[in-house]
Structure formats: C-alpha cells, structure tokens
Image 1 (tube, rainbow, N blue to C red):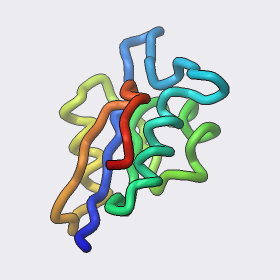
Image 2: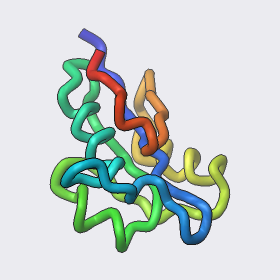
Image 3: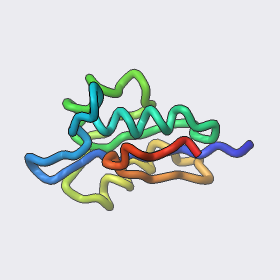
Length: 102
C-alpha cells in the first residue's frame, strides 16, 4: 500500500480562525486531524497555522506544527519542506469537520 502525507491548513484571517471553532468538545482542526489519523493511507501530518494556539490542541497527534504566514502559498511551501521525499501529499483545510477517513 502506498501512503500519503497530509498538510492541514489551519490559518485564518485575523480574529476569525475557523480551525478553533468548537464542535461539541473539540476544535474543528482536531476533528479534521483525528479523521486523517483514522485513515489507513495517511502517514505523516503537518499542520500550518498559529503554532502557539495549535500545539496545545494537536501536538500529540500530528507530526509537525508549523508557524503559518499570511500567504496560503507560502504555508503550503513551508509544509512541503517537511516531506521532501514524498510521492503523494494531500492538502486539506481545517474547516471541513465532516471529512471522512475514506
């Protein structure tokens, strides 16, 4: 089986970061990362966003937490640097809590 590394974009506009909206008892980013972890094909996960806020919530369940910038393109490039040898990478946003492991 071929594995896929994942990038989760968890940045947001100043003052409104959907990654930290709560659904029941967890942040939206926790739902997304938790679902990725349940997938049989996902190997490593890098999350890009406000590192100081993300680390307490997800540092134990992701491989990398990267301080984001104001640019989505730059954030993707920063995360890609974590996976230089990867053949396939899945990029998702942190505001899709209904994502499934399939």
